[in-house]
Image (cartoon, rainbow, N blue to C red; front, side, top):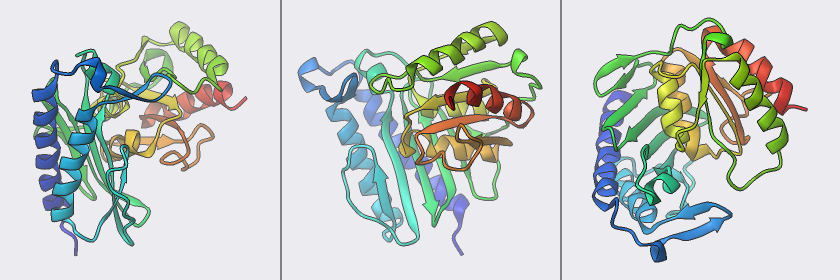
Length: 265
């Protein structure tokens, strides 16, 4: 029987060590070290170095597991277990020395997420949970907010930076939320945004064109903290489906309906 709690504790240390490496490197980069993966989509040697460090440590922790990684350090598919890793979420923030920047690590067993760790390195806040366990931030239990209505909610999102195919309906949704909520925030790190939903700082989050490594750990945290996640149609294809709505249970249905009314046109 897998001891998810112990495995999570080991994963936390790996995420924290990667965070220490990233923080030690912040402010040192020069723009010659930055490569573009597409329009406004950047990668630094620190992204790659963090991923190599994380993969090496996780291979020792669970040798049979495969990996889904942002920077493609390793090409290995596990039969049962697969780690989903974003070694540095918020690369553009990191380039400009602006918080937040996070390390995101999740473990999938078959098709079920069983561990999630998001380590935001500038504030030193590590969010984590494991299957059948509560969600925590630095040892303190967390839960989603109790806000009842979208009109009383603080919403988080991510702005499109290279895929503008759905920009028009997205901008229309923003206009709605500007007028009908407490406000909209955009941090530049989806993993951090989702961790903030899990601990109740934000009431809801949505974004399109996200990858599995951006959201795997964060959506697991939200689930363990009492919230819900879905794609824009309300289905379960959010991990690999490039679209995500997440919120506390009270506002989820209303929030999903509003997002869907714009983004499903």
